[in-house]
Length: 231
Image (cartoon, rainbow, N blue to C red; front, side, top):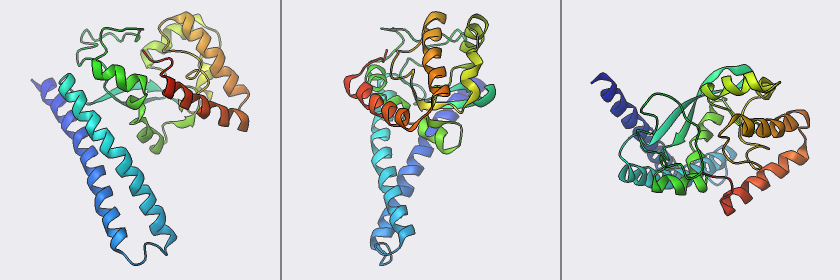
């Protein structure tokens, strides 16, 4: 009973946070538009731009959240423990693309191609990477950067770390939302695929440059537009 109650509280808190973001953006946006100082003040223009971004993000997120709930009742947001800089854990936020009981056994499982646990709406948001949008909050909180190796689930770090030399070297930098491995490989579902992705991650860690900082976002846009690499 306590576990069920906690589940509903977490879901309600997530939806409340989304509504608060949307409402605060609307109110501040309306206030700045009605203010005489809005066009002249740099701070007001920055705030106005930020609230336009919040509105542009929150409204589609609210629609997607409703579709997720209608498609498969359960929490809209999915929380996973991932490893960040120097192996420290943090909670990663995603929109849920799998059934609510995807890991009912309690044992984490790698996502695979044509994974039957993925819901119809989940296929769409995973292919378009919409499910990754809440991770921007992880960036705001300082858990992640924009371009770096992707953080892995703590459970999936142990096996590759034993089988692959220098695996933990990928944790020498803060994890990112997109990276060299993300635009070149699909979701890793085995130790061998983790080895291939590690080669990309270590290449980035060793050869960070402005050129890579430009190339990776461009490749990320290509992956999203052509729906490459998603399960």
